[in-house]
Length: 111
Length: 115
Image 1 (cartoon, helix red, strand yellow):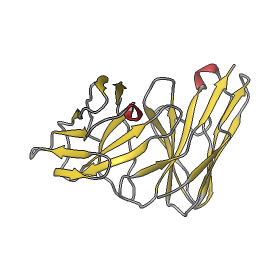
Image 2: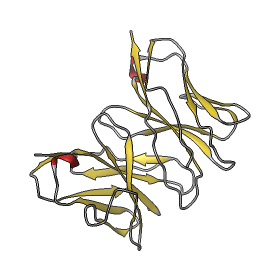
Image 3: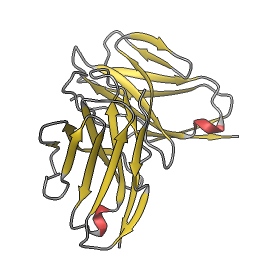
């Protein structure tokens, strides 16, 4: 399983765009990149998943360069409620997959 | 999507006792995952439970300490046996609603405090 590296913490302000980068130098050809969000006292919540280039949904965008050795989660115009821990995961998802979480990035949004 | 209910949501236990955590899913799923999250830490996978077969444990976790049952496609239990204060954690049940997608759904977790 590819190991991921993320910043331990980040701070930003309401209304700003926040970009969290994850390094995964040993990503395999068939691995997908997935991001989760976790609020205190809750289980993680799936945000977005991608394989290459760019993926966008109603919550975030995921940018993946051609070499796929890193990815960037982009949160547009954050609010206080985006304060959470964000996890980047890289894995081959199959019927026998097991999903391993890295250390995560603790994002704090200030007024 | 999948809705997961865990019981108990929290408990305070005495050293040396055992506690069983229940996980109920609102749909049939092939695999269920049990994670542990110690205070301020990331999630650590304990084991993967398939219906009708023995659970598969990750390194550092053994069946005698964390026995798991998976009697049907919507239910699983995790028992934390002979507890010590080091077992104080949040235990989370998770499922992949659609196998092979990598999209996990989690319960709210069971917060255990061992005195």
